[in-house]
Image (cartoon, rainbow, N blue to C red; front, side, top):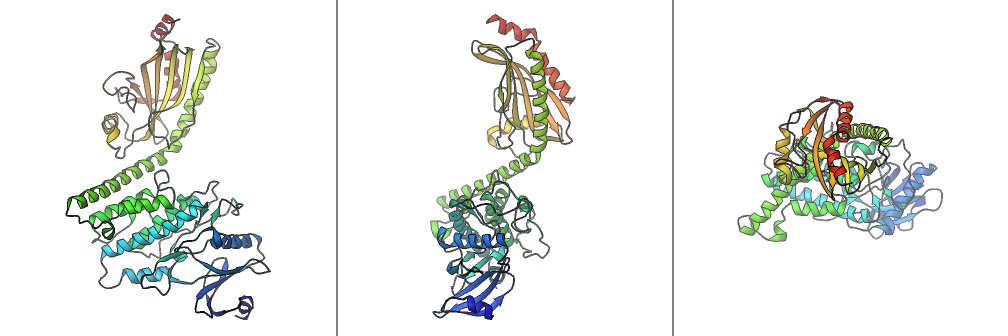
Length: 493
């Protein structure tokens, strides 16, 4: 270790080499004042990109962010042929956790409380990073150590070698993967243009599953575990199990997950009881209210995740169908405009699966603003998962008319008139999308009946028939050739 000793600053001496280390060689060192640390140098100091990453890591940890659960840097050097730094030395988190978890007499409640505390502590540290535009991107047991020399060790996050920093140029080529296969979201296996803090939140959720799964650590755990496939000890209490499933479910889908470390801390604090903090017993009324609130939140998270997963799965097909629908209606507009120059397209929005509800996508009119025929397309969602109370009755009604292989996205096409500033929809069609890409076309009682003028925009009065875009175009054309529509419009002329 002579070459290491030559690089060490005054007061430090090398003790032993460590295995692994990623892009850096690691050596245990000790200072004359008794401090221990890890001396890291690049394995290939001539690789320009590796050198930039190494220097970025030092820059992040020296002054940008400071938290007790982020590794501390004692000394560093960026000059010379070989950059180096001496960081805080910790014990293996993986080994410590497995020993602590299996210690004789350890209850499941203690294991859950400790796992939640560890994840919350790391999330608190990441919250500071995220506020600074720093995303770790490689959270796993091997990149966490525990503080040495403490009766109750706390977790310390290390290895910011592949961290994203919004204040620095991107160093990841398009073809490179980041993160790790076991704990990172699949999208991290390729370069993403927008690096969001949720990527760290996802890895924290995977870390919680790893800590609490009855069979972990698993040698065959080669990719992220689906939250619903995790196996937890049988003696975990119902309240804790519901909270664990609620948290691990919601982090897995970005649209409903905590956006960053700060939101992750808040969610964990809300989901899991902290008896020492609130001093209440579940037997008194305050405790029962607190328990009901936690359980209700956990169930809501499961509902939100199920809906988000359903939307994510159906979105690509729905977007393709809407693109075809928009092209069909625009081509119809080109034909009609030759005869009726007043035709205008007032709304032409892109499809967005993240906007749930009766969203106007396309709106065309013939005539003046206060006397015109209207044809609009709205995006609707009729989920097969539990819909929630706000439109539960409507969804249950609609399901009676949906084909069993329909996805959750549908498009209401409604024809109506504007007379004296008031709009009245006279008829409509409802194309439901089948998983194979086909359509079923339903009649829509738009503006009439017990389910009209609500967030689902009308009710189907039949189970639909197989259809094509030609059938959709024929309906749109029929609105503009219907005498009843023109009767209302010309009466105001």
